[in-house]
Image 1 (tube, rainbow, N blue to C red):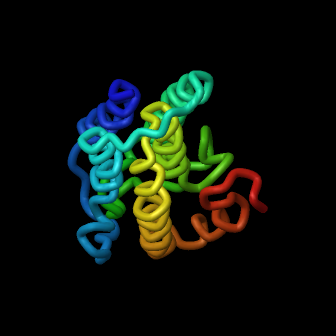
Image 2: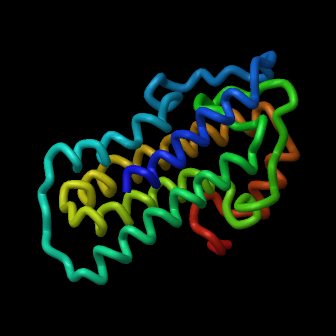
Amino acid sequence: MLLAAHVVFLSAAALRIVRGQRAHLVRSQAAWWLQYYPPLVWVPFVLAYLVPLRVALADELHIAGVAVAIAAALFAAWAMWSLGRSYGIRMDLFEGHRVVTAGPYRIVRHPMYLGILIFQIGATLAMESALLLVATIVYAIPFTIARIVAEEHVLIQGLGDQYRSFVSRVPALVPFAR
């Protein structure tokens, strides 16, 4: 389970190195906790490890949770790598930032966030954690929605009509929601 989560973290670190230093196009003015969503959204996962409130589940659900978590981590990593030099932890836009419509971005506008939320649902089953389920519902989902709203403002500000067109064609978080 931790290995699957590390796929996402290692991808983020590698992409930061690949991207290198570039001049800012738009600096987000969002609150610090929205800016640093990527590491903060994992707090419930860590909390579930530290405070194991287990609910016994059938072995099949436990195994399915592991598979879902691994698939979701790979999906989120695919989304990061599809962004390439446009990836960043903060919501700032840099020179050369572009609208990416290939890979998982054909399905949803925010596949990393979808992957993270599905990872937490899979981890809930894999860890048999009631605490992670509650934390995902009460913390991670609303936090993710707040991040998406703030990020969309920055993307529209920096990428204009090209991003507005993308918004009109591709759902934000739920595939095939249109």
